[in-house]
Image (cartoon, rainbow over all chains, first blue to last red):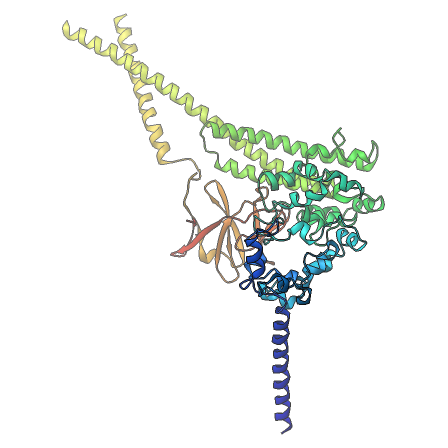
Length: 425
Length: 143
């Protein structure tokens, strides 16, 4: 009897909880009005008074979410007095400072959002208030970006849609709407040439010119809703999200600690921030383009190591270039270049790995890798030389054979002539 | 003098004849015993005997001019993908502990379907078709 009562209680509790969840979900969804019976849209369209940025393909409109879900009012009434009455909850356009909370009514509520996207994040508003934008907004700053500044108000598309203002290719332009405004940025003591700098960088060229969506846009380093300038300690982690080996090598060096002590900005110190250019071997060493000499001077350990690493790299680069030149000659001569190509790919890999190993600042580790690369390059060079020699052997052989045939023909001519003379006699 | 001329002509014909025979036969012999070289344009490549390929391991196959990584997964399935990392063309490897494809140059990681999962690779790896025909593994181009 006690067991039966126990099981009945469990069933009762489970069913009650499920009903509770369903009812609360329905209650939450009542805040979202369907656009199917939407007089807001039909009337505003009729009088040609739709918002300036309105798009028929807006994500909310596609999900049948009425204007009244955000602006309040009664969309079922075609009487303006009733539809836009404050008694019906009409709030109109929200104030700038209220926009994050306005969007957050739904976007911070998982019970509402999971209906549209089961895996959607609902912490955007929470993150926003930790960002510089959000913090300034709370102090009453009217200029800082809120949700609509980046996403637009009535032409919102999913971030993966190329029409979206926050689609990877569009992000730099979207941020630049404010960050490229020098008058506005002056107020915050910020530069306004980030987009110009970024466009020249290896990342900017990949994203904006080559349309490579794998390249980072502003938000990949600064964050989205919680956008902040990366701190000194986090810079190598920010870059390290993509450049993993470089970060791992650098983080375990003495240099990383020294950088922190000196308040140096990790990767940025040598590579820059928005203008990250394709690194050159001359950045290491002690030449005029070297970054090492910014801190190290002749006689100290760092100076010697930098000089050594540069020499190791240059040596490999030269051997690789030599082999590559021979490879091109083999290709040009139409000889068998396949095996040389494979060897050169390995040599190039050793060169790339040696360049990555620079971040260990350990000439022994770099030296071991460059040694591998030089060996492979030399092997490729030898093979290429063999093919080039083979080409000349074949060409000379052909010339000799032609000469031999020519002589045979001439000899035959005289032989036949002799024979004729003999028979005539 | 007449005799010398005839002798000269006969010698010339003899030497020339031998040279001519050599010049004809050398390309024939070269054709029959070709130098070791891979076929530049290939549509399929034999990659060894299935039973001799250990489970949860990989090897790099030369598919014409392109390196291809052939993986035998834990459940004895074959996967063949381009072995050139889409970042800077380094040759990728299979990590038997994490069951992922890894590029040693910049720590780029791909899943077993070739999708770029983390690190700098911007694109997935090109996939090849693998069939086992009479115990022999054959890799072919997709499509």
